[in-house]
Length: 121
Length: 251
Image (cartoon, rainbow over all chains, first blue to last red; front, side, top):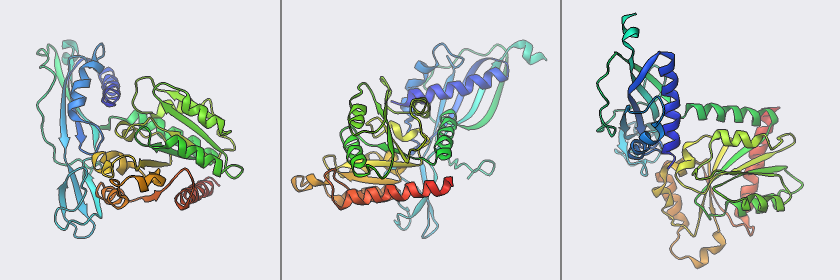
């Protein structure tokens, strides 16, 4: 269950951004999680409130975009979707493929609430 | 492929949010786009560790596998075989005990034990902290024996030059299909305890190799036993070649 550690790293990044921008609280955090990232979206969602308690991220909405695996075939050049444990070309079944999507574990977007003062100035 | 940073952001699937909708904001709302690796802080420490290893010309090898697949036994056999030839040290990761470090020290090489408590993996900071207790000067190889676990360790770069994954014949030959991220992360796979193969009719080495290929693993596969034989010799040769290339890079 390393998703807790992933959430803690995420919250540290978000808290730094919030501090830099003078935000009062964090409304939402959007992350991208690839099927080959080694991180489970559902576990990340379960771990988030635990990791966020008492931090700048507490109460924020965690939006997880899951990204399927896509491979590009070195033989026929096709780009197809693949299962994480079957990285074969969907067109010609060759196993010489490059993964072009699905390894992501990224922070994508953060939505902050700033104070009314900050909005005026 | 993202043109700005070269990352591979593909089409995404929206998921229903898990956390309840927060109260309506009172102030000004600002939304910012960022594209950063969530484990960026770990990756930075890993790069720092790698710089330490490179500065000393030390080859760092991260050993990963399920519990009981023979990581410590492989290290014992390796240390004995390389005695007087290569200088070795070991960082041991374990949830609770010092047992593995004690086994390594009994072979006459330095070992630092990291007890992770309930953490299921090592991270770069833990390895960095252990390095403070382990002088790298004069070393040829530093092994990091990760926590026995086929899931979590795969996500954390420790700064090692090579990841070696063990698959023992007492596990299923479909382990790579069940844990694709882990086996894909390896540079070399060692099929261990092959001396037991005559007693295990369910494990097929060729099926294990097929399973590795299907998860996108394109490194070498060696069949080894701690009792010696051609596979262990090939593993030692692999290490010697890696050490030589590290030295050449450091020179």
